[in-house]
Length: 246
Picture (tube, rainbow, N blue to C red):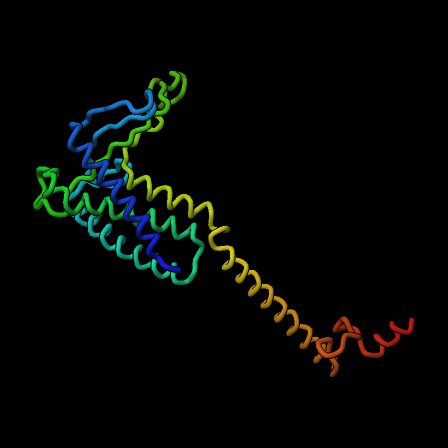
């Protein structure tokens, strides 16, 4: 099966991701919020120098490592997508891999080029290349409350669900990974069946070998694999004939 359509899906994710980031950069200022659907879906412009969902990795070495890891992961996922497509893997799995690939490339573009193109690298960066900050904007503050005072350690503390700010690339990666985790039986059904059949065959062979050994120890030349009259290795031919006569 051709992998072209899956790469087109990845390209679509990249275009949507980059378009949303550039529009936010052009028309919003840092930390600005715009209500999209009431109070529970907003656009909130943030710059994230670290990982997905606002997680940060605070060190020069860490940022470079993260960027290069993303680049290598991007090529690795692309190679794996082609390989699995040629093997005729379930289309649902390949779609998930395309989502992950598109999301990975989307964030790689930010990390690699945005420091130069958008001049958004941290001030203390040794170089703007590979130090671009990822633009996040999707914010879903669905529910917030204060913990009751009687709860130990948490009493009186403010709690917000869902607090991370992320982007389309993060969403694509998350959806792809979670779908694969919860759909393994459907995506890899043929492999599971083959594994079960292989296990059953090995069990039968092992059982047959035990029977052969048992018959051999009793000095019985005719074994149940050649003649069905004798069902147990503890049953002699004479006992088998006697049982039949009875």
